[in-house]
Length: 346
Image (cartoon, rainbow, N blue to C red; front, top):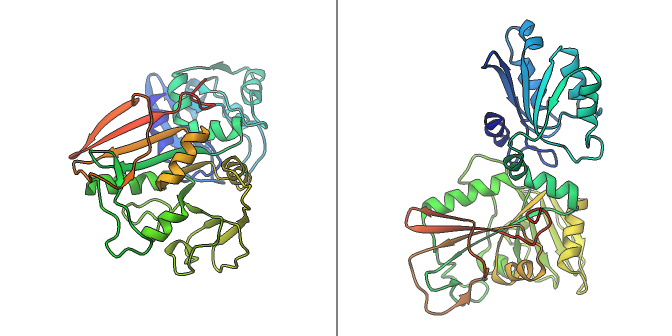
């Protein structure tokens, strides 16, 4: 099952609203086939695992391991439960049930009705963590939210700067941390920043330091302050702008009307409807604090560098102990999980 998890992670950032799934076929304690769900709309993990087996006569004597319940419905691909039965596989081991309404236990039931032995709950907690984005999106109808910021040793995320300040942002973390952030961007559906961050830093919000896909860019521009010269409005990357004024953009930009009464929970509902399964929030302080105050966050990844600012923009504050603490070069990384959020509270 741990090998299923390893395989499933290879689909991070590619499966969109589909879950991360890996599958392994074992014959006499030896792996004879394995596969994972590569991309949205492509063959499922079980299909790829079965296809990889050289001698199909061994399938009827093998056990199929899969970290998520095999699907049982005709979607973009045929049901995996039917294929497993057709291939004569007699035993299936699953980590987690699939809460997607078209599955939700029916995959297991179809396998059992075909005479297949099914074991569930193998490394269940690990499986839940792996698919936390998908499970949160399906069960609670909002994207999974990950906050990220870097702070100085004395608790500031930036100096006080005016929009367009030529000095630009101060890099608090190191080069390795910045590359890691681009990897993280590639793993999420979308990346969000506030208007002040766009005005001050003019970020591109892409994955130029990593080989993965670019996330959908999102910003909140209630008062229409953004200039058409902003990088995130260049039309080259999928972008969603929540705006309080009527604007017409070209390229891959969608606008959503957001008047002063439009709250963060409304943003989350809209992004759910637009099939955004997860959001990586990169700034700034006002947006981060809004997420923290509303409770609409699930993880926070906080870098702390060696430099001190003495004054500036105070970093957001989480008054809990971190769940993980890592050293990334000369910087410290703390990972927090919101115990009050719907999924982490299970």
